[in-house]
Length: 488
Image 1 (cartoon, rainbow, N blue to C red):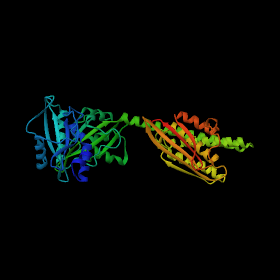
Image 2: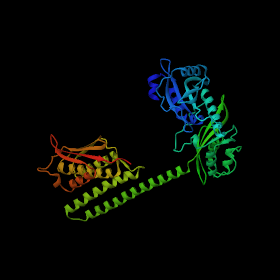
Image 3: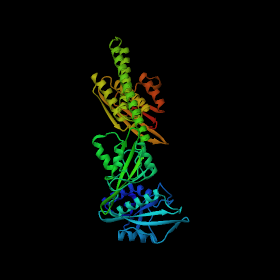
């Protein structure tokens, strides 16, 4: 729709926003009308182009093809021009035929701030010629009321959006038609079922809905006033009614004529099962976060025990090995701490990499070396298993760069990350560069120390490749590519 409006019109921003508001809510009118709706806007050359098209979910549609972007032609242009000029609903004088099915077309002027800004065409199929049921009669009468509100600039309402929590009710879920006092004039079978699940078991028609439900619902305190306003149809809001047995989503659309409220239509939907599943997911998420939190605490306990054991050893080699183990355990704990603070099983890895780099640099600086660290590029979100392996690899490479590159002086360690995609695979390319003393003579990764062996082992899990090279001008460049798993 934005593309059509930008290419063919010069409408003001406020008009575009109004049309978006209408299109965001016109499924309601389409379902009540059992008809296709097409939004036509005037082009810069004086013609008309279709900016949006919607089909009913309650009946048979008219158009199989999408009309968006098409220009109006023939007699339809005349009817659209008349509706735009006369500011009233214009019905085609003759019944049109599409695929041997009679179709009625109507043109409805769309008014904003007392100015016609577009025209809505309604296309109703008469594929099954029969006497309409009471439900259909009520739906069509409500659709006509909404149509008149569009011609008077009173629909849509900015406060009546369909966004928010999942489970927004639609026409097919259940409809209640109220009079100006909030009494039920008509209740569809689905709406009756939803209200009965709340605990009300009496007749619906002729009953003041707010009073009937007020007797069966638990006390809600100050929010009761908001609930009563919705149940009487006075405000275009959405709310949820929860009793001991069910949860029902309700949306009110006040109906007006010449600025005077004449009643309302309420859309209702039983969302009990949907909310139950949402609570289960929240409980599951909370449980997963708690597990990660406890794993992190347990790993920190293990690290503390190893640290105490290292302090009791006289052998410098054994003490250094335990201190390396403490560092590796702390790296894994850092990933679990990140997972414990989020709702998803994914890690925003940039902060983890930043903390790991800082920890390795701080450790070397305690030894009197003035090593600095720089992080460039973007790691992004990683699946939890990939994040743990990558954190270990990065920690080992940075630690090796600090320990072996700068044994007796300061320097710079740079970590650069880049995300790419190749043949459907998500790739992460990382370089760890230092300006230290370079690789030892005859260096062979497969004969390297424990840290190198850990890196090679973890890269197998990531289906990755790694290389060590001398850096021009002095130092070492370690480059590896990891194939990441999809987030799920």
